[in-house]
Amino acid sequence: MYSHDSISAVFSKFKNAQQANHLELNILLTTFNKNLVDLFMQEGFIRGYKIIFNNQGKIQIKVLLKYFYNKPAINSLTRVSTPGIQTYLKAKDLYKYSSGPRGLYTLILSTDLGLITDTQAKKLKMGGKIIGFIS
Image 1 (cartoon, helix red, strand yellow):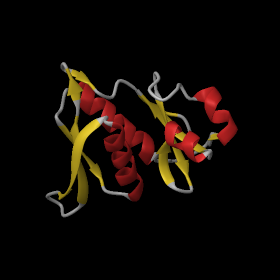
Image 2 (cartoon, helix red, strand yellow):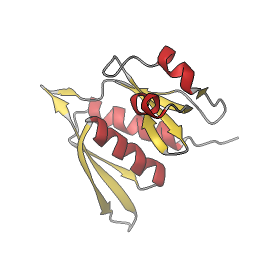
Image 3 (cartoon, one colour):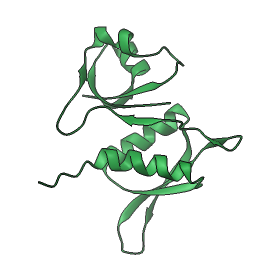
Image 4 (cartoon, one colour):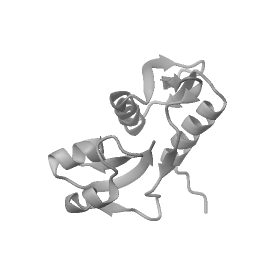
């Protein structure tokens, strides 16, 4: 049985592009990808992004990757919830699993409000599905 996990594919594209020291990366425009890129922009992990049309007429997001002293801004990008195993976190449990306002990593949560970080979830006192974490 074939199963395609588009979130893991996007995470892999980010990791591979930064490992190869690429300055930009193109990903397919979907609502999730747009929200994810907005979150990365908000948290300062990327320089910016543009919506573009590729040669085949598909709409893509061109992400401008960020580096500090030739090291990628995104050190680690790990998927937690997979299509087969969903991992949820209640609002009261956020303090156990998050690493503080500017800790070692940032949790990416999917909530009713869309994608938010663990810091935003604490302020809003809401939990959600853990998509992954980034550092």
